Image (spheres, rainbow, N blue to C red):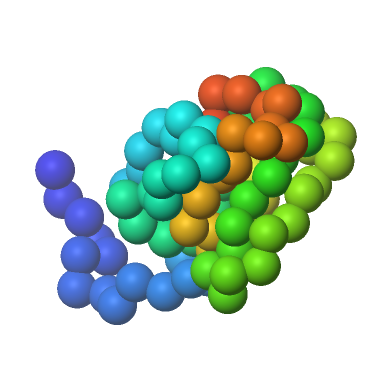
Length: 87
């Protein structure tokens, strides 16, 4: 398949080119920092930001796309589900 953007430098303002499913964990970091999160089933979301701070986002809507650089989704405090990391 032809990709007209193959020779362009990726940036945080551009679209994601890869992703992975996230299982919330209090003890394990993600395989890589995200550029965004997709939340399939809404609820609360507790994350560790790239800077190291822990943040709880309350009442995240189903189908939300959040432009967050995170290293972990914590199980404690997270009620959202069907979460994907976009990179």
